[in-house]
Length: 336
Image 1 (tube, helix red, strand yellow):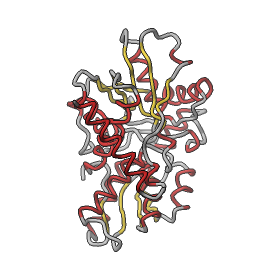
Image 2 (spheres, rainbow, N blue to C red; image 1 turned 90 degrees about the horizontal axis):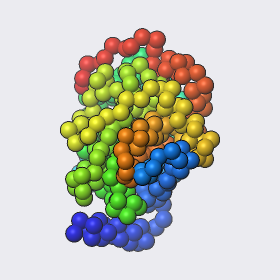
Image 3 (tube, rainbow, N blue to C red; image 1 turned 180 degrees about the horizontal axis):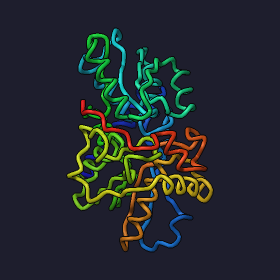
Image 4 (cartoon, rainbow, N blue to C red; image 1 turned 120 degrees about the vertical axis):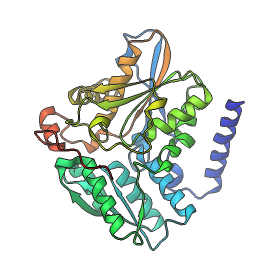
């Protein structure tokens, strides 16, 4: 019954895209599911697939959440043409807001750590976004706290997108990513692995998969410490906990070193032809560890973005850690 319902949802989405004029918004989602072959030759009975999320028009998985957050804000009346979209970001969600804001005619202001990559800064500036920089020592948590302060100082001026706490984030994946994975695997997915940033991709997709089959196993991927160089991922124990993150639905969490994430991203590029970012490397590293621990299954993971946004590509991982963090662990900001 559930499979029939999901097929109906997929068909209704296809019909909706046919009815609407073609635009970047209608091209968000429905990304390919790619089987990883060369790097899994030593595994018998287990297949690993990855969603190619860098093929979204804004270049990352965050297009899905960005569209849902903005559209839900419009439906609720909280987002109007008079208001400015405000949020904190390390880059990808901000690019999604910027792209969608340009299409829909909204102004966008983003609070970002001062050490985000030049490629992301250039992309955001190209869209005409106002950038507010925060102390890189405090990372994404410092940007989150500053965005909250700005909003509370003038709530009538802003629409608070709040990706870390807005349920529209995980619902975007419940309504799209989870359904796509079920359909693309022929309903055979047995394990799902995704990085933990806001938690939206992991929790939303996981809830939809579990709803279809309670036996599907769910795993998160986090950096191995608060001092790391994997943009887009959070070490939950040392960070402000996202309100939408629900670890109770997980079967476990893999903790990955920065050098392993970058090393695996390099291997995916050179051995599979997939030029992806370090968070994709982390997700595949965890997926491979999982595959080596089970005798059979269909593992699906998420490759959030492409490698073009990471020019240094961790030739020196310690240098990368210092660029994104500091030489010593930062003090944890007070929760908002």
